[in-house]
Length: 278
Image (cartoon, rainbow, N blue to C red; front, side, top):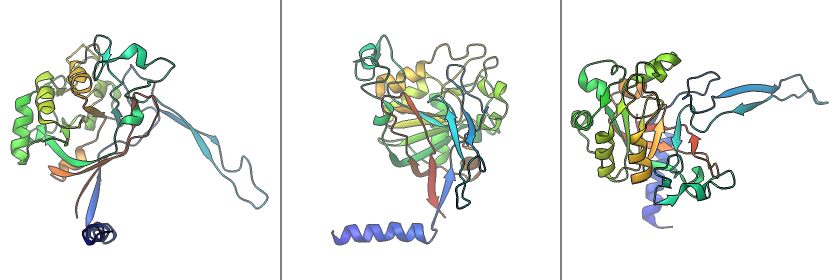
């Protein structure tokens, strides 16, 4: 081991052990009945064994649960197998062939990388002087440019960019949050193309679908998913909660996220965090 490696390791351990860093949660807890897209089965958790159902000879007892959920429920990340266009996945892979056998043989959730990256928060409501964007409002390239300028950051290759709309404050009101009638704010195609041109590896937002959902349209057409997942191989993180990060005025931070390695899946629950200096 080189002296340089030891020094770097010591510095990182010192920061962690001496609490020189703070961890800011960027996602929601998983709760039975939380809002989820009508395209996906919701999250359910219940105890199937309770303390006292069986007591061991020494007095010990244990409890455990069963969890049923779709891969795109709660805070989660999309695998590149999640969306196809004209029968093709990212990299011109044939979707029909790749999904044979009940799971994806290519681009499954097990291929989503562990992410330890520079993270950027583009806080659009803060720039616009509102608590949250209105329902059904498109977030444009200019909105993202203005938010980046206000934060003093520029998206670059390898980054993870998180877009705050303020919509997480409606998470406990499923009808409003899902926006089937009134719509949901989110990135439009131009905004997605701007992010893709920067070379980022993942983009996330505090809504159910990441992208702009016009009033009355629901999730009938999702062109931003095509631009990011299919055309550019950029993972999408949805159902974020960026309210604490916004309250702290975060703009640039260390982003950490570990997807579950679900072989052949199309998405994974995640617990993303921002690591910042204390």
